[in-house]
Image (cartoon, rainbow, N blue to C red; front, side):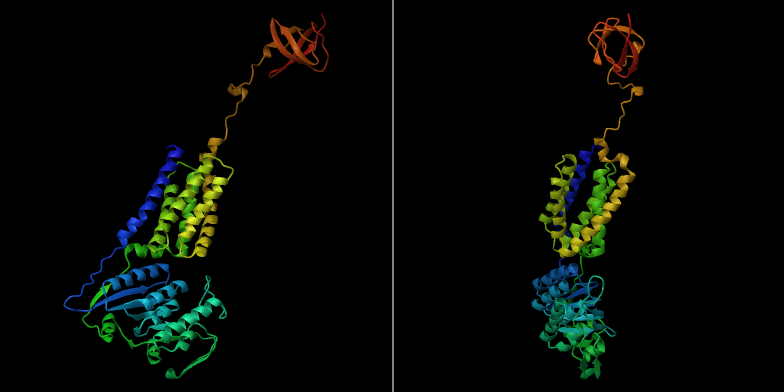
Length: 456
């Protein structure tokens, strides 16, 4: 298949699939809740908030809370079981819970650590499963190291934890102790002192004693009973398939892998055309990236279009050289589209940078291995015009060797001589030969005929 046709085909296919993402997500994400009450029973939404807290969970909870409000639910029971996650996503979820028209009760199953404890503290009531734990909300960086307690992020997070506890009548000092371990706090209810260097973490029994839990419940039914909602119609609001996929795709490691496959696939297809598979993998990787960002509510059609424009400009630079201008603009558009589509621009830029370096290494290896099929071979003349292959720039006159003729012009040292009626351009070895003097051919070297003077 012609290279231009192949490139146009998969580029148009990539554009078509990316443009169809909005429609596909709308269809996949529209989950109809069976919200109408039957026989006057109250409606309760049971929403899982499990695994890592990040932008995908935030988007899912926004959809769930909106659905609960539209169906005028009486209560939301938020099933919390997480080791934590992103502080910014947790704060957005906390605001969502606090501002919701439908009251929320958190049911802590297993662990509600770090950002999970903040989410639970924003609920009006907290019920904990026997053996569950809440607390240990230190702020850590990307490497897992705790940030200094004097850092602005830690101060803001500590303030947010205090505020969440205060608004629901809980001891704010305990919430702050879950974040800041540089303080000593005595808790009379537990007959215990949390010493400096120790983050506060409460078991279900301890949380009940200090007012951080309204009760201990072993199941969903026991939570509803404690809330006075026995016999309520329960709507379990689970993430859709697209939301689960999006949460997986939003993982920084997965995002970096998609960038590697996407950039390497496109580079290989551009420079070593004819395979088709690398181009398909590259296009599919970027489709998945934008799919995840769109489902999470961050990417728009404009981001996708900007990315496509970047790819097209890179292709133009290859086939219509523009001194690098098209390539520079294309790279800017491509990177802008990817970064603008992400929730965290700095994290996306880092993943893109890592992906670019590793992708170029991978693409370079493949391009070198298949260099004889590369597109640049079309611009390199490899044919050798050798005499033995029948290629000559001018006729070879070896038949003149040894022949005698007459100089038609003075040879100083070049001029013209006649041999058997044939005019030939000749040179001497340096001697001067007058017009009309006899000459003899002593050397034929390609198109160069060397003569010397001959006495009559």
